[in-house]
Amino acid sequence: MKVLLRKDVNGLGRRGDIVTVSSGHARNLLLPGGLAILATDGAVTQANSMRRARDLREAADRDSAFAVSAELAKHTVTVKAKAGAEGRLFGSVTANDIVAAVKDQTSVVLDRKVINIETPIRTTGAHQVSVALFDGITGVVNLSVVAQ
Image 1 (cartoon, helix red, strand yellow):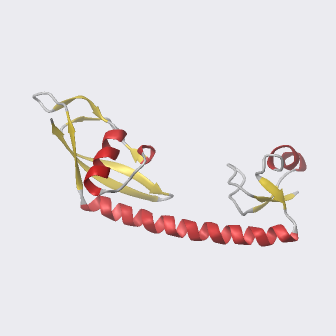
Image 2 (tube, helix red, strand yellow; image 1 turned 120 degrees about the vertical axis):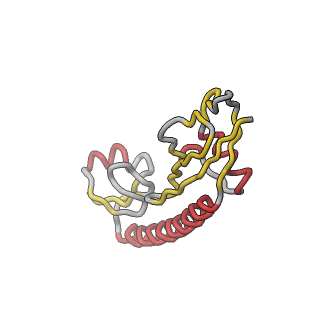
Image 3 (cartoon, helix red, strand yellow; image 1 turned 90 degrees about the vertical axis):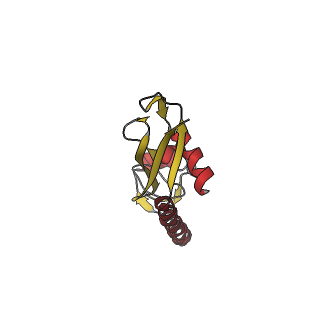
């Protein structure tokens, strides 16, 4: 059975795609849940407009991700944390701390979920943290952790 996806479905396709699924899967999950509609001639026209809108939105998101990546590369963000005499922190620098510092110092708003801290930051000094901005586009935040 051919259906037009109205929303992204993991493992099946993205919004606007026409996919072939078993009739049971379509009848029991996709159609009642509003995730898909039957692929009729009118639905194919609707699919083309959905795909066109999706492509435009993705192009705009990709461009803004490149701009944010370039903006982050220009700055070194300073994070203040409590530390001992030897430069060891009382805890670690979290994604929330990084998001707040980036917002205050560069006016770039990030979500804490896109920040990838590979190893916990527990010392003062210079560190780098990667940020997943868009599918395939990552930026780097240069951190300078200083003692309060």
